[in-house]
Length: 182
Image 1: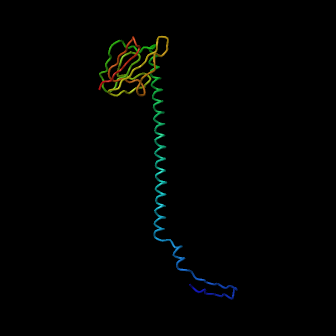
Image 2: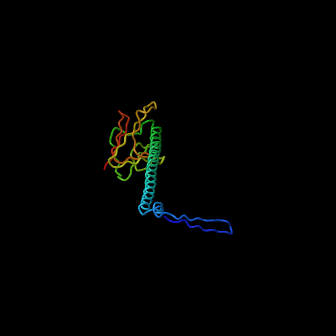
Image 3: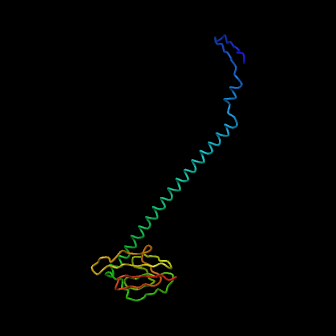
């Protein structure tokens, strides 16, 4: 055991007594290499966890926003499509003028339905909208009845009226079907 050492400072009237320290006590309080390594490992793990949680949260938020944007775009496309079809029906009193026969489009790049002429042509519609259809797709337009009511819902693809391939109008069903050629 360490003997106490006394220091006297008479000018200020203090006496300091050093009792010393037990070497085994200082070893207990001093961090060891194992404790340091453990602290570093836990700090690193905590940092990685925070980064991972942040990445997962950001990915989820981004995916949610992408789905919202996609749904909004689809809604906008369908609204403009229905408006285009409505315009066709109003201009032609519920009949876009096809006969019971096959109307083919020879231009493989782009064909448009011309509501005024009632035929498939390469001229765009006067309201400037197109429904792009790709090879292998098909489109069916439900027409209005003579009293102005829709016979059924529209089945359309894309942003406006644009046919590629061949179209058939049936006066019995009041429908125009366009099957696209590859």
